[in-house]
Every structure is written in C-alpha cells, then in structure tokens.
Length: 247
Image: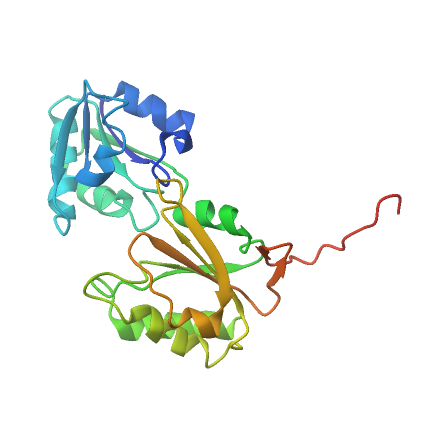
C-alpha cells in the first residue's frame, strides 16, 4: 500500500510529538513540509529525504508529498500544530483524488489553542471559537462577521495569525469589533513561541490588547464574560461548584 501520513508536530519542541506521530515519522522514507517546520525535526531524523516548498506554495507542497507516496516511498507531510487546524490535511485530501492508490492518514497534533491555553491556565474550559485573523485566504469582511457573531454568542476566543509584517493592524481591528459586544475589562491573554525557545505569555484586558504588539508566533486568547484571573491564571469556569474539603 502506498502511504502518506499528514502529521502535526505540535508547537515545535519534539517533547510534544505524540507517539503515533513519532511512529509515522520513523516509518517514513520522505518528510515533506515548509522548511522551518522540517528544521524542527531534522536533528531527530537526519537520515530522511526532505522535500520542501516556500511559503505560499502550499498546493505544490501537497502535490510533492502525494507524488512521493505514489512513487512508492512512505511519506509524511509535516505540519506545525495540528494538520487539520489551518494545516495541510484539507488540501491533501482534496488533491488525493488524483492519486487513488495512495492511502492518506491524518494524525493529530497539539494545536496552538491547546498549548497556549495550558500556559495561561484554563481559558477554553467552556465553549470557545477559533478564528484566524489572516486575510490572505479569507476576506476581512468574513473575519469581522465571524468575530462579531462569536462575541454576540459570548464565546471565549482563540485568535490565530494576529499580525505579520504586512498585517500590523488586524489585531487592533479585531479588538475594535469585539469591544462592540464585550466589556473593555474582559480578561485576555497572549502566548508567544509556545513550546519553543523564547516562550512567553501574559494576561491583560481587552482594552489593552488593542495596542498589543503581536506577531505570527503569537496566539491571542479573549475570555468570555465569565472568564476571571484566578491566582494569576486565566480561567473560564464551566459551572462546576467548588466544594470545600469534607463537604
């Protein structure tokens, strides 16, 4: 059987690799992906054949991986985080119809929403929404509508891709949308380089967040109306009563 794994590396440190993903990488002859993601695992798998394409050439990367598997080489398409969350699982599966002999298996990884939330505390314990602020593939009008609907529903939010060198104002614009329906004191958090060198995080209000300088390595968390700071941690209660010992 010709086989292509689509795997998630998690936030970057190989300690976050699931045993299932590690097994797939070990079985693979070829590892395909975006260069900086491949660099995260080269030291662990130096004997592998590597295939990569630059940013914005994601579809060419998917084809490379499928062609490699179709040629009889067990291949892994490597994604950061989880391959099904803003990753390559979708386009690979769409393109895989052209390669009927290749069996594609998607293996999950720890996405930024989860690794970042754990550093901050428990901001996503209740219902939440994940929204990307990148308007490269989605219009800002659609992003703004999604932000507004999520704010109206009082979801906690996890915001991916809050800023880049060309998109410096998207986080500010997003906060302005959210402030129409959320109080300025709403608890928010940020995590930079989760699971990588230079890992940092912090908590602030929604009003302060609009002036925060984020980048593409930052994940933003916006609380619901129930979110609180508890012992220096960001916590969104689910409704459990906190019982006293012996009660």
